[in-house]
Length: 339
Ligand code: SF4
Image (cartoon, rainbow, N blue to C red; front, top):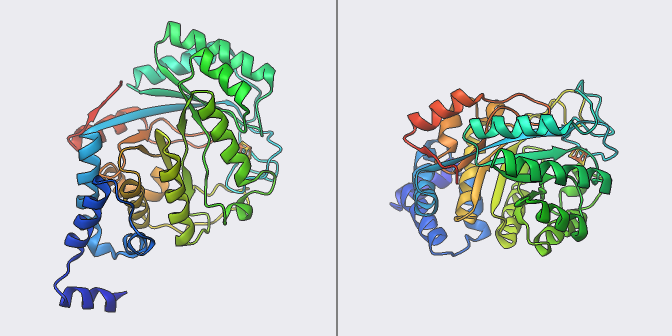
């Protein structure tokens, strides 16, 4: 790599001008080639500010200086029959987590109010399991209708695999977005989960879209995937055009099959976020699970690529609290956008 950098610098072609060219392509709606994507992912740490500066021009063009906050609630935890390697709630995980059935409606209402108080744009209700039963769907639909009437906040549902009929029930109850992550590339997916397929995930997203729901779909990085897998899933998301793309970085929890995996440096995470933005210029890109443990002290820089973040923790792990997130956003000179 050092040799390549020297050669390019000798040619007078700096990373700054190269990344500015990629940002221009992104703003014009042109897709970066695989070689250009690889250049972003392989760029050296000393070119990080050049990459962030160029990526920020894309973020500023389509998202201004606004930041969206999301708060999620694990409404049903653990006891899942699936075998997703990254997940502490799976059948193959021995992680010491809290396990409980669907929480009471009152708890969902309180969670929604806490999200509103945190200036969240959306409250995300997540349930563990392969797919929600009709009993759970109806229960959640009633809760969502109450949340919208009494709290007045947008709701996203993440309930595993779903068909169009159940998706339509959520839509009618007032859910505006359904989250279902692609998680990784089609090629790498069987290395992470065997109990359902990438095609199953795609079908869920198509069902949600057919039912009129907006899509939230993203990925988890740092699970052992190759750079081609990183590019594949980000390009697939570009084709899919979800309204919202959560970018997660593996937080390897003890007791999960991926325990001990720690592949990404904070700079690697930033390069992935920048590529996510360059390939998906208009989307809401959320720096999501694993932000704190992977980006560490570089977390603020992530918002030059992303325009959204979770506060107050994840499904089974804690995260940055609301006050700290607000302070970080303010210190960066960004503004929280609620609607
Ligand atoms: S990610 Fe969802 S489907 Fe997979 S094991 Fe965890 S709770 Fe189950």
